[in-house]
Image (cartoon, rainbow over all chains, first blue to last red; front, side, top):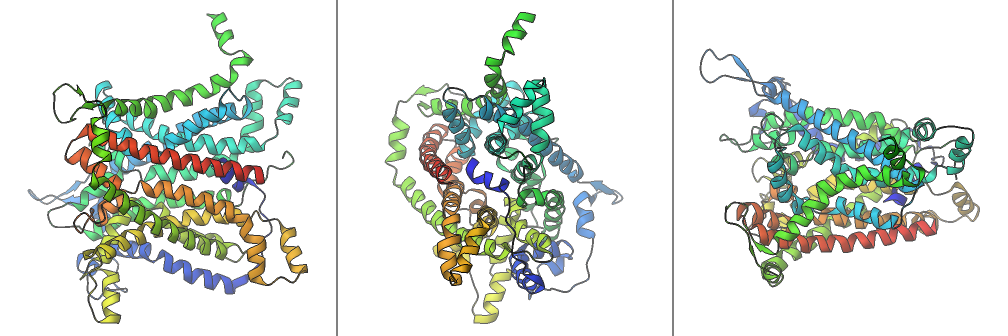
Length: 297
Length: 297
């Protein structure tokens, strides 16, 4: 993966200018590709009758009732006051668990990749292979022992358990990706900084990290996308208090009155917003590639 | 105590110290559970019963390897992997070619294509099932509008396989696109200029200049997506639930059933290990090509 991902960091060549004609062409193709998502977003703004209308309706009066229903429902008994569905809490859980997990993986992964890149051990490649294998293995293999293990030490259903698991889940990928970025920095410059009396911490934090911002951003985007939507671990290891949105989403499917399409679409739409925003903001890092300025091998 | 710290942070121990946190985390969260389930596969054990495990030797491996059902599931998985990955490569490549130009709003249009990758499996699974639904489904309605016949895609084996393949390929083609795009933008300018001087036709330029540069990346995308699609679970589970009958039940869905519906913990562990073996072989292949590409470039 390292070589593959290191391509992100090579300097992008000047792309040919194509103009507005190409914008139109690419826009139409992309809209067709985007259509299923568009349909989900449209469904979120539809009333129950419009959502399953035959033939399908493309023009309708949008309603926000589905978005309200995501967070509040009307009580069946009593005065019909609004009760919270707890979805706000699940959104908080998703944001908290995903960001803490990714953050932890980035810290530990960056340190480790610095080690792998600068102070190779005996059997460095074997370690890296084992690390990669843990990323590739089907999660179903480890899920039962992890479940039993968490139950034993009382981590089942806690934030710490899921965060640690997500950090471990993102770690192999972070290590491989960050190593490929470290490999592109020249150690000579770091050595000369050491000669000038810079401490190890200084070299790492003041020299390497600033140059790796784009690499960190690219790693973060991939990790966020994968963690944000993780379902299987979350299903088995979270409790009512720590439940994440994908699990809550799946629970809305199995209702007695069938799937409430508008409600589900509203949850999906809201859930898409944060990850979409992160990707959009960091897209330049994802594709522009990183120019390491003067210090390049 | 001070001696201890000095011993620990001496320069010769810097590599291990940097890597240790990552390895400890991976050991606790992945490798230890892995060994645990490896142990379980040699015992009679059910996660749902309180009976102590009894030693079983290679009984479960023999059982799994001689089970015709396992081979059937493997064939189903292979079919879905082959179709889906091929489709991802073709669509991903075509999309990458489209974005290998500079045009107004490129950043925004690219986001449209990247969005499917950011959706959760639950969203894709449930909504594609709705699109295929015979009476309300968008696809079914469009089909019957043009052909006059109703479409019951998920009722036949081939239809159901296509249903899964389309959803999976739609979701992951953007990933292939990102990798190919990274390769395309790394083709050096001078090669294109040379081709222009030679007045090479567009097709020839593609075959002699562009393709060799992305061939390696395509191969990596192929292997990476093969490993990931091999584990396909959520989409199958949500769209067809293995049906009609068991004709689209992939190996991961089968393991899930054995583990969590029949609670045959030992048998599912043995089965998981056979999966792991396949994944390790594929990962090795993957690394071999990564290395080879590294030596070339």
